[in-house]
Length: 491
Image (cartoon, rainbow, N blue to C red; front, side, top):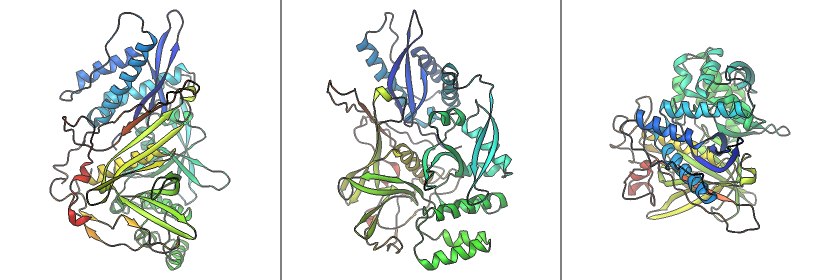
């Protein structure tokens, strides 16, 4: 199963119950409200983790107090609990432990019961899942329990489609929003095993569930082509991506060839041709504000092929800039919550990454987007796949092209690319020696404007980067393991 990516925040608290009242902490994961928990429940989680996660050093847990907390002490505790969860969530060994996953899943269910979103924990529901049995995708009706996590629902969907069981791991479930007027598809989030798809969907309505492939290395397509069901899903997903221009057709000739192969139903030949296109295997995000090459630039963001790509238009020309993931030293996501509306979407999300623009020249590049959390999840999954091919395969030592390609004259022309070979994964990151759970360190800072007139805005910044835990470094500098091995020749 895929690695869980958890950005925790506790933007606010609620006073619940009557005589005595108690404080409930509103827990957000990956920018979305997940559950509310009392101090004693989090204390119990800490005790469980201490018992069951031997060999892993846990962060300090905020101490118990005998007397009722003052407002100042309550704020100190909220902040300390938030920091504790961020540090727990950053260690893959703890984040992926069965105890952590089950605790979060149960907490989400108990909160939904308390808030009367569901009637009982045995409640059975029908969920519609969009599946690519044809390019327009069809709605598959699946029975599920409100308790079921994303992994269990994924398994049920794949069984329904008669997909061989060993191929389930190449797929995942996304929450997507379709724009009615244009039929454009907006990616909301990738569902994880610590959540119930049924309950999460209630929090972010209106949304559809969509089955898509979940890997970044297009070489893994070969694993699916032996199964008729899997090949059909991959082929229809690709036809849909081509029609919504997620896969950019580089020349009219290629477009005509693909149309012809599609009409003849020659799916294998179609896939062989489309796989050669530079944007094949990328996820496309909505237009976002970026500060590259200059502030307030609007760009289309896509992630895939070991790169994050920005497409910007200046006059009649479209420029594409590609940032290779192996040159990102670190990245972080910052969330600004308005406590008056904290249960709704966060008011402000940014992804910033530190990039090696030239030899010994690092620059922070910021993307302001409601999809920043998902971008971070995608970058983390891509780095993880590069460092440690989960199936025992070796990381691909070859790297594609230079990072910046402002040579595109129109959206249909082919960007020129120069090929270079990178030795970043040479000997240190073979599957046997690469750490299966590179630790992640979170940066947390308060960027609250100190104004009495405005509602209190708090901003929390989390780094979702694979860092080496150097101890002495204390989080000020963070380094992506994939970044460290880049040779001078590769610049």
